[in-house]
Every structure is written in C-alpha cells, then in structure tokens.
Length: 229
Image (cartoon, rainbow, N blue to C red; front, side):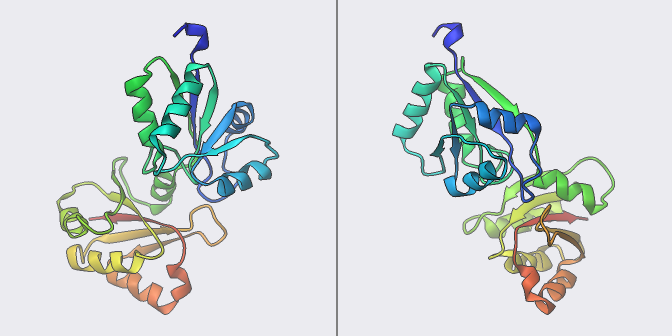
C-alpha cells in the first residue's frame, strides 16, 4: 500500500443527548468524510440534519457481516475517509465500533485512525456527582443475564467509585440488587444527562428506590450509575 493511498477512519464522538454538544472539528469531519458509518441511520440522520450536513450514511452495528467489514477495509485501502459514529457518545466505548477498530488494527495497521473526542456520559456524570478524588472504575453496561449476580457481588471489593450504565427497563432491578449487595453505599444516579429532564439522584439504593417508586415517570430515561463507598 502506497503512503499517499492510505485511508482514514475518524472515530467521531456524538452528543449524548443535547445536539449542541458536538465539536466544531466533529462537524467538519462529518461533512468532509466520503461516508459515515452509524448504528442507526435514523438517529444519525437527525443529528446531521440539525447541523445541515449532507453526508452519505451506511449502517454499521453489532451485527455487521464479514462482507461489510471487507467493504470498509477495501474502501480504506483505496484511500477513502470514513467517519464512524455511534447513536450517542464515543464509538468503541461500550459500543460495537470496537470490533471494526480491532479488525483494522490487526489487518490494516497502515490505516490512520483518528480520535475526534467529544461528550462523555461517564465524565459528565462524575463531574456533577460531587465525589472527591480523581479516580474511578468504569464497568460499562451491566451483564443482562449471565454474570449479573457476580457483577453486583463484586462491587464491595472496589476501593474506587464504580461507574456503569443502565437502561430504563432494568434500573429498578439494578437498584434492588444494589440494596442487597451494597446497602450502605452512596449511589448517584445521573438520569437523562444533558437533556431537558436531567437530574442527579443521591442516596443509598433503598432511598432512591423510594424516590422512583413515588414518581414512576422518573424511572424512564438513560441512566449512569455511580456507586461510592
């Protein structure tokens, strides 16, 4: 592969809620790329339309076939500039984009992979939690089935605050598990971060369960959970 023909994969962070939370560099890259790989073209399409960007979009998610990967690699070998986004946040962090990046690192090490950083639900939650110190353990999404019990049983062994993601469908079940495994721990729940109904709930697991049961509408949304001893 000749140096001048090496393609570029730009890993572009997108907003986690508020569509204004995107960098000028990210907007430029999305506009300049030959095409944009996205989890859901409908979600990314709204973002591009909001910022008046007309770009070709192609779907890339956790179910991407070997044929899709081969096509992407061929395009990069041809010198194409491809932007990779997720529905929200940074591709490759609790996101299927990691599979593509790993394949490129192994098969096409000459390809340039650029990080275009931006909004992060992890740092956004930690910044408004009021937890002293500058260290934490990020555990991504909780296992849905296998390993879930072990996950909660392991939390008391962490010396640092632990951060993980949870969905609207399982937040109450997660709090119930925390009430069993870490009843005395202080739990911070960042709900709908950067969105209109953003809030941070703080208390032990039982106290937060009581709050959410009293107002079921607050059980809806996207959640970042911080467990701090």
